[in-house]
Image (cartoon, rainbow, N blue to C red; front, side, top):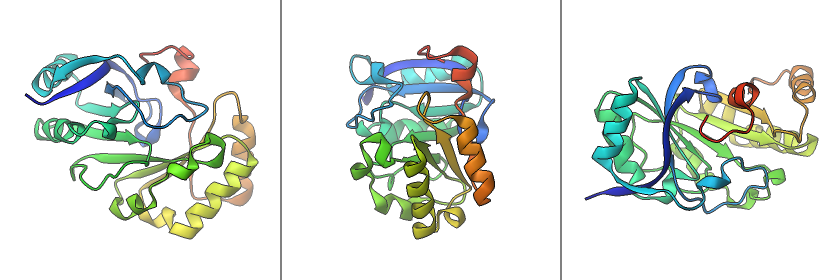
Amino acid sequence: MSTLRITEIFLSLQGEANTVGRPTIFVRLTGCPLRCQYCDSEYAFSGGTMMGLDTILGEVEELGVPHVTVTGGEPLAQPNAIALMQKLVDAGKSVSLETSGALSVADVPAGVVKVLDLKTPGSNESHRNLWENLGHLNPRDQIKFVLCSRADYDWARMRCDEHGLYDRVGDVLFSPSHHELAPRELADWIVADRLPVRMQMQMHKLLWGDVPGY
């Protein structure tokens, strides 16, 4: 039987990406090969419970909303994550994947929206970016940069220009690292440079703070 190690399955509001504010079921897979210095889900690095794919799907159905985000940790670190996403799509769910961009997204089912987090130098993991992933993105997908400083902002701008990211995906998301970069500073930079990006803040942290499971 195909299984996955699951940290939690819960219903909340989507706090990020272009579906922010929408009631969403989160399936959080355990484990991550990265160690970003600002990580807010370290509790998902280990532990978790082994669950069969049908059991996971059953819990999702019981929560009763059509939107599902597969997250982590790093979901793609578990190969059966691909099969889970396909099952969710086949069940008629609107599915998104939150991934670090360090592992290949080539086999992610076509019906899944990929939210790919390109790691900035301030994350201490920018060397892990798998740049060939950009070739597997489409206009339904999104690219996220978590910015820790002005240097990160300038780095992200250069990557957007270098790789033509504004034309490659539906939304390029710039997000200030919580407690590291003042949101107003980032907003002012984006406006001054007239960047075609969507600024986002982590709405779940504004509502519930740093509480896991929201």
